[in-house]
Image (cartoon, rainbow, N blue to C red):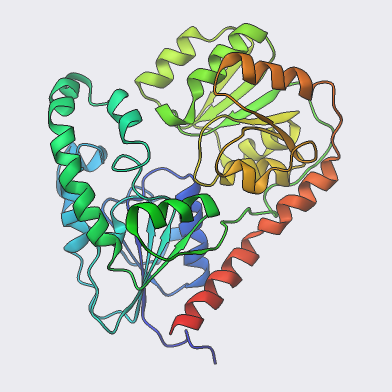
Length: 370
């Protein structure tokens, strides 16, 4: 019998809306703890079979029209939403946090562990970038006026909330350094995972590049479009984000840039397998999507900062470009096209981040803290 048997466990997520890296980490926490209850500010994955039969508790924000679909506008409500959850009956509370889920309050005898994807970006590391790329439409000017004073107070609250967890786990050494800087906490590192059973190399590569993700400013879709408008090489861009930025970038894309909106995970996996290289231009805390590409034997061309330096091996599993501009990216693409990569070796490297390793490491960590 393990220490975790007969423990009542809750998993808390910031929100459950789209399905990207943080949600995939959540899914494997749910696999590891099949009887855990789920708490989140808003929930829009009712058709996802992963949640069938699971108890999902949402906050009062779920009942507020308009704000329940725009988590950015509910900025000041989300901390209150997390603090409103009654978690007193649970022995262990695990928060999957890139924002406010770590704000939950637990009893002294409850073991509270935060898996930190990043200290809240719009409070800390990327505050000025978010400030310069407001997405509130007609409310942008009002938001620009209010944000400095508002975020100053929210930073203080966020720091206090980060002290509530008994232990913090980060998804990379890069994130760990920011947890230490912004929250003044000791932190352990457990890398996220790649589902190697769903992402496999099934044949020869085809003559196109690939990028996949949410069309939001820091993901640098604008850099990808500008670079491929100039080099005229073929690229497929996959997203499920239909917003103003997506429509603007699609409108300016030349015919060599093919956009795919809201395609299935299975079809996306086929593109991963066939692409000649996967591009990854942002400064990322940890990128699961590039690992999925490498699990398909696909090399990664990544911006040489943060996460990529921990998982991409230069000249073996991919290449780095040193500046987030068109010239640097296109020069690296030209270098890539003169090289040959061992696709099987790339997949073997990605298997070091297999989901079973993540689950076992997380389980052992929690057991050691009981």
